[in-house]
Length: 269
Image (tube, rainbow, N blue to C red; front, side):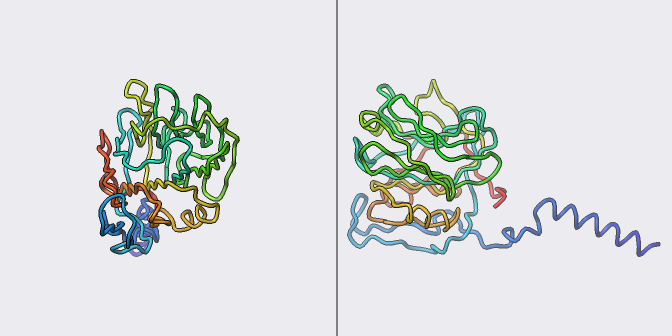
């Protein structure tokens, strides 16, 4: 009887630990501390001569991700070198949305007053791209799970939207894709303070490029996982890892300033 009760207690404890994720293999994986991998630009911000990655860039899971409360959290970033007008651009990142019913904004920049902006957000379990006062639907984006999302724009009248391994390419009128300026740039909310539509959930590893990434390149970034390093460093404009801070690790100094954002190591990955 004594042994039986002991075995039962051990089984209950092990079950509880399993439910808490203690035995999840990712819990034992080494996690990269903030800034473990970053871009080195020996000639300074905005230059590409001898550009390379430095540090441990083997795709380890990040130690932290950014947590947004859905009420007041957002990150304002620098905008130096952002692609303007109808210049090619690409954006990718990792999102985990816990409430998709509040138009959670993932990332946006441009001129809000004239709707000359690039903005991606979630609505009704799908990714949307907004520009020129019109929204364009992308692949499905379920809540309460990590997803790789982004866009790639090569000029012209179409933009390709990505969610994990899925993509769609809606047609956009030429006048709707022109970006008038770079300010503001905001992660996790709309750029105009009085109209903030806040994201509730987690964000990680945001990358902005001044080139249109190919489908194969986007797929490669997706397969790298949430801790993956950028491709095409010469075209990398900003790299907000969101691994414990809001610094820009692209070497271009587009650092972010956070409001009500916290960082957590408990992110189910």
